[in-house]
Every structure is written in C-alpha cells, then in structure tokens.
Image 1 (cartoon, rainbow, N blue to C red):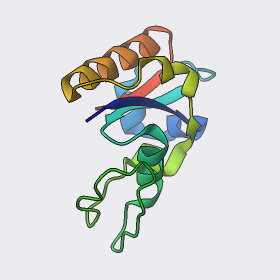
Image 2 (cartoon, rainbow, N blue to C red):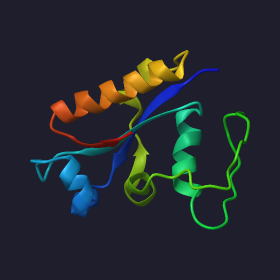
Image 3 (cartoon, rainbow, N blue to C red):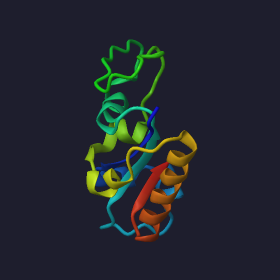
Length: 125
C-alpha cells in the first residue's frame, strides 16, 4: 500500500490561535502557515477528510479507492478544517508515493522541520 505526505496552506488567521502561536514562537506576522500530514490516502482525498469528516454525522465518499474504514469518527484536524485553503502541491508531490508508513512519517517530520526552518508557521503530527 502506498503512503503520501501532503502540505495544506493555512489562512493567516490561524495565527490568532494561542496553541498555534505557542507551537511556533517568534512567528513573523507575514510568514506563511502550513499543516503537514501523512496518510495512506492520496492528498486530495485526505484533504477532503479534514474538511468533511467531523461532527456528529459523517458522510464521506473516498475518492482514492482506499477501503472506507471507520468514518464514524472525527478524521479532521481543527486547523485544516477551519483554516485550510488549498494543498500546496509543489512542496510535497516530488516525495510521493512512499512504500511504508514509517517512511511517510519521517518525511512528514522532515518537511515540517524544513518549513519551520524557513520561518513558516507549521502544525503537524
């Protein structure tokens, strides 16, 4: 089964969140913000899960032909659901697909570290 990393551009309003600011100390007001994730689902499908798989009633149709699994629970990260604008493909496409979840998890951490080192605000994990 292939695994993927993905990067979501977040609206600058995410900087109003105390938790986001705490995880990104010294973040410049003009710095871009991102969410970095990894999944067995293709990035477009996983992004839709963040946007649609929350709340008391979850209705989701997977677009990447993966087994549906349990979509009765929240699969959404708050920052992507509330502030996610679009996938930032140029930051991750060249890494995909990967053969193992461990490889995807390492790349997720690496991408998050690289973006933070460039001065970006990053939420991941």
